[in-house]
Length: 120
Image (cartoon, rainbow, N blue to C red; front, side, top):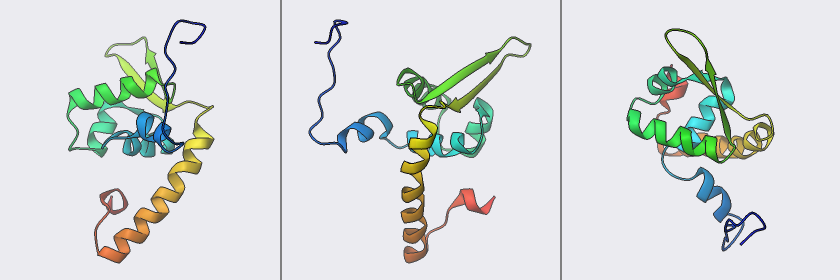
């Protein structure tokens, strides 16, 4: 336990940490879109139509709790909430996602797959 009384995570290897924090089907695509610009919930739903509202909310909450993204609530009617990547994490996540995107584009070309985000 740490000095604050919470248990610190233990990982088998360095790759385990990003997989634990950013892993799953939705977090890296969410970060991909949030690195482009801050976005509202509805924008993210349009960009990722296969994600349910419940899952989107859960993933955004987890990323916020981990300090990866921020959630800014504007005091207006109707309510406006904007999500963005934190300034501290932005450069590291850009460095992480660029090679993943590069490899993804290579794989798409090799396999003849499509990337919907590039077709819009």
